[in-house]
Length: 248
Image 1 (tube, helix red, strand yellow):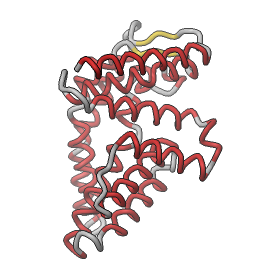
Image 2 (image 1 turned 45 degrees about the vertical axis):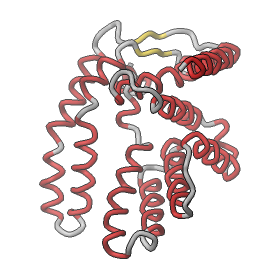
Image 3 (image 1 turned 90 degrees about the vertical axis):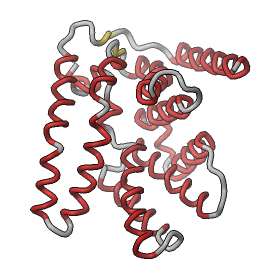
Image 4 (image 1 turned 60 degrees about the vertical axis):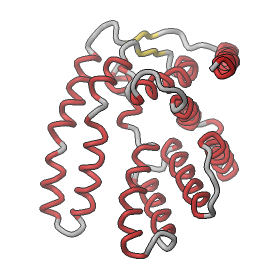
């Protein structure tokens, strides 16, 4: 498990620690609040976009965080121009922009996993069964499962129950650390004190994941599936979603 990406990947919780959409939204939110208070709503837009770009760079500019950053910037531009934004169209446009800018993304596993997970998250926003967090995790797993089986030959069996246990502290930790960074620019000591307050929750999350990884049945390692199975899975999934949508 650890050799193939650590306990979070083995348990199926890589999305919890990966820099992606939620992180970008936190950055945009904090920068936006500061920008609106200093310059007003419209004048703060370039400031927010710059904050997103800087975060993408600082986070390592991986495919997932670039995708999230591009989608956020496109959404902000659309809202500024008074256009209603749609998540699926934003994802398609952001993916097209990324591939046009660097065709190498077509061969990037992280890019395809990020796109598939985002589709799952967007589909999870429709309907109201289960809690939002569990539904989002479930749909992200459903959308990425064939790619994970193709590239890694690994399938987590405990992602949903472990997510229910560990996901609730993540927003608190993210907001606390964002506040610590902001205050740290003014007072490093105060920023450090606030960042320490997030340690107990972070330790709780890592401890639970480490415990779950030790369960022998936490994940299955199988032979990687071929592209034929991957394509067939997505065709069947699209048909199933259309049938459910028509009935509802």
